[in-house]
Amino acid sequence: MVLPDDTTQIIRAKDHPDLLAQIGNDIVTASGTTLLGADNKAGVAAIMDAANFLMQNPQITHGKIRILFTPDEEVGHGTDHVDMQKLGAHFGYTIDGETLGSIENETFSADGATIHIQGVATHPGFAKGKMENAIKIAADIIAALPRHAHTPETTEGKEGFVHPLGISGSLEEATIKFIVRDFSDNGLLNYQQLLQETINKVLPNYPNSTATLRITEQYRNMKVVLDQHPQVAQYAVEAVRRAGVTPKLSSIRGGTDGSRLSFMGLPCPNIFAGEHAFHSRHEWVSVQDMQKATATIVHLAMIWEEMQ
View 1 (cartoon, rainbow, N blue to C red):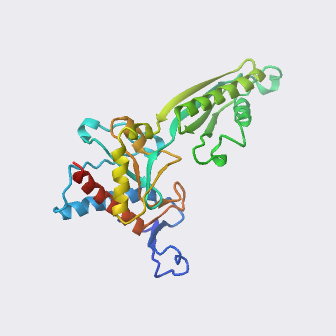
View 2 (cartoon, helix red, strand yellow):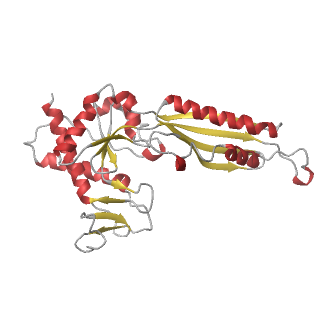
View 3 (cartoon, rainbow, N blue to C red):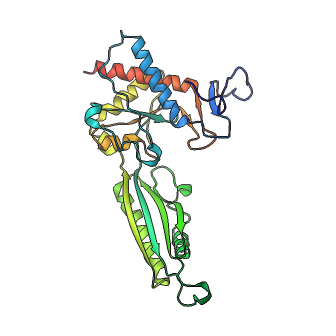
């Protein structure tokens, strides 16, 4: 794996015994001035290393393998232009997980929510009893949402949330964008209802203004599909075990392209790549964990061949 010299350094345990005494691994980390890209350059590196290993060792028998790289996964558009017929695969795996040995067969279900507010604009010098400021309406809607529940900073495990991502606008019009997450579709509907009820609570204070809520589906919990094909996750568990690692089958409070791919006809759990501190300038990955991810991919190819 080759990364830019100005953004990446490899810290070796032998050079920093005090710093890494408890880790015992070679760590790839960022300089602190930019994102490393562990999410998901680590997965790309593991996939390419596994492909190279299989090409260099033709004695290892396996079926046809398709490798798919998608851009824009973080904004929910990674699979928009995937041609499933051209891909020609029946089952898949994303290599985009965190802790060594982790396999994720369940994700959030996800929606985007947008509230568009139409206020009443007048000259501020003659605004008494007339002006209804769309920015203030937006602020009131956000302030009226629960503060100590249903937010990312107050939830864990299987709890969902409503998360305002951004607010923009002017006196006359404003927009609030949210992401909504839950492990069930019913949970998403409850949060949609929460947003609408909040709008209904605030708008009577602004009788000449309007606010409309629009929901956009993003992805759904892949467990719904994977439960119909249990062998896909089971083979991943066995591959991790053969790689010499204890497998951990779990849920993820997030999503991967595997969520959308599963509902496009390609059941697709997520396998660890060793990434940590996602979406921050402190992203890092262990070289040894990436090597185990590579070994898992190779064993996975062998297991599918054995089971035919």
